[in-house]
Length: 149
Image 1 (cartoon, helix red, strand yellow):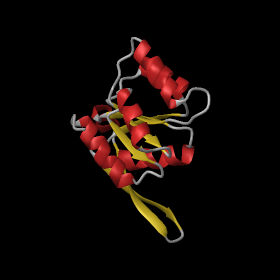
Image 2 (cartoon, one colour; image 1 turned 135 degrees about the vertical axis):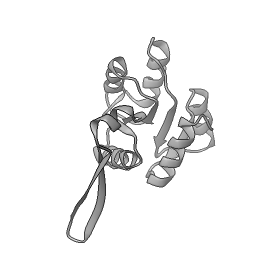
Image 3 (cartoon, helix red, strand yellow; image 1 turned 90 degrees about the horizontal axis):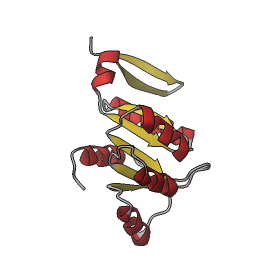
């Protein structure tokens, strides 16, 4: 079975969407997006799913930890500023837990050399500044999943 393609849009904006069969989805690399901005996480989810990844979203660090207890992910894309449990606390709690820690890419509007060094010291493999350019994120995801810095 493979993929089904269909057109989605309204007005002058139309895009092709590829829908994978359940069998293809089950074999795809799994990514967890942790961000309280539902519009951004939805856009990133769509972008990555069109690249063939299986994507799950969580609105904060606490929700992400709950998902990590029941699902295995090959990569996490993590916002830093979120309610309930922010990204930094999520990283610390994850390190103190028995949960498997996949590679993590941070997305944040706060960037700079000091913050980049701080994120790297927490074991983050990649950083993307918000607003995230989808093609750049796909490149960072591909590199992280291949073990490249």
